[in-house]
Length: 140
Image (tube, rainbow, N blue to C red; front, side):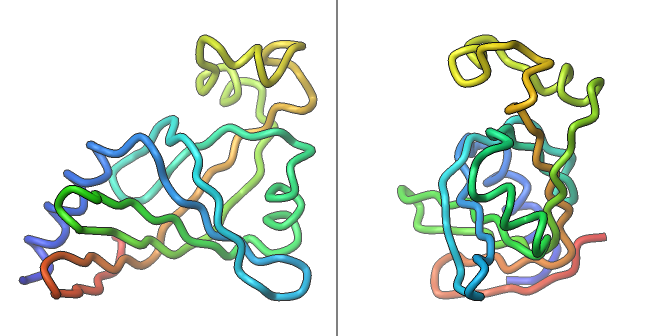
């Protein structure tokens, strides 16, 4: 499979996926993985997630922004790993943009809840896997 085909299939996989597995590094340099809802994305470059400011993942990304996100189709046994960096953001306009109905269950004080943060992942590299084929490519 060439890189153009891998890029196209990667875009389709991300568009079809609501869940991403988020990888962070803990304070002992061990990887940690967590499934999270993908809120929004901009191609394969930027991804947005909501989380509690008090969550351990927030502290991990504040200490070390390096991470990865992984999308998978179990039905077709294909996956996409993106490596890059995660920012923890408190920008009021961005928080409002990312706010979804039902979030008040997790952030009872609403969009201005100090325990509501937005995670912004910026991807630099990708690895697409399907049918025993791995394709690495840079994210423009």
